[in-house]
Length: 149
Image (cartoon, rainbow, N blue to C red; front, top):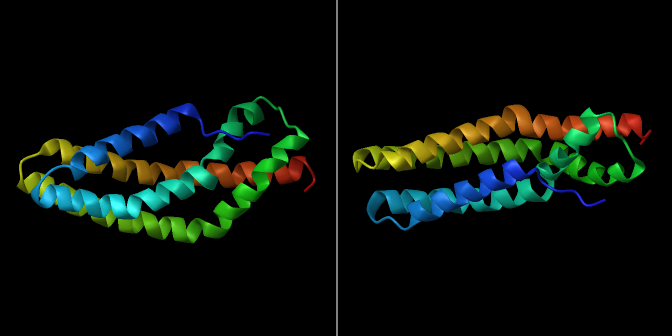
């Protein structure tokens, strides 16, 4: 079974990457702060796209009551997320700290669009912590029960 990240989440990640890329091209404190965000954010996004977000692609089918044996392919991903959750949350703390630095620089340099971007990305991290990650883990736990794994 091919697991895919839900399209809205893919597009959101792409948009965040694009906005960050734009910020890294700024000069001065904004550019430097944005580069620091990129340094901690990129490896984190890679992990999310590898194992934290693909399980969410099953959510619509599961909500319809559709369960099939090939969905067991998601279990290694959800187990990895469960095992790495503490690390993922710690990475969020580093990302948020870097984003606060970016926001402060943007406010000092009177470039509110970068402060707004930082706030948006902080909210994105909170959504993952409170919704996406727990949902992905629950998908795995649910499938284990349904598939007797």
